[in-house]
Image (cartoon, rainbow, N blue to C red; front, side):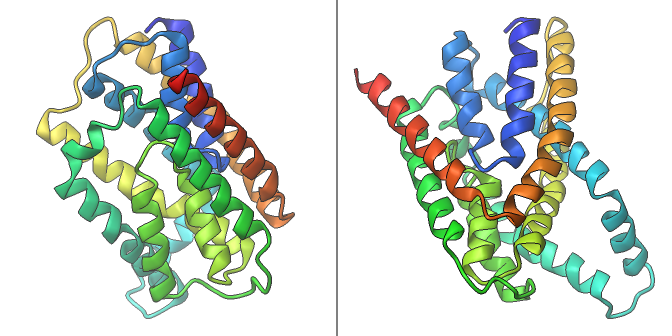
Length: 263
């Protein structure tokens, strides 16, 4: 992977992390198109680095909300901030379970599995289509709905299933207000990403060769900047109920990916 390819992949990650089209799926497709022959472990490491960049962009966009959450936590009162934090923790349980007990199986999917990515993109398209037609979305996130949304997030660890698409769609189908759904979706992934990076650093599974630092750094910056733009854009799109555009896009890309692989 050269510098230009890393920047391209970073931009793709930054845009598709927040837009409901599957960042992991698009990264795998882009790697194949660019001829990236990285080992699955190296490919996953680069993916984690890019996810870290978009997690930071999320924190920048929602810095006021995050500050309010921490402020509420240290008041040691049963307030809205504490409840919201506990709901975030509850939503993390399914993904943490999958990450701890099925890590090796998960890593095997990140290595040019284009047919799998294609089918998962079609599933994402169906989720977005159903969510776009949902009515009566005026509820708040409850502890029960947080766990259900967390299950969607765990399933979205598969390349091709959009994390934001799955979690926002699930939220909307549960009747949750679209703005609250987007906010919860973007914030719930931040602790998981930092937890994943911490686990990998302690376990030694994330390492950089000397010639990788520059390329990984360039990808990181590109993903961070693109993420800032995409996060704001996605919140606006969810409010306007424009998810069917992305449903059509995911379906087309999924069909093309499957067709090209089979041919």
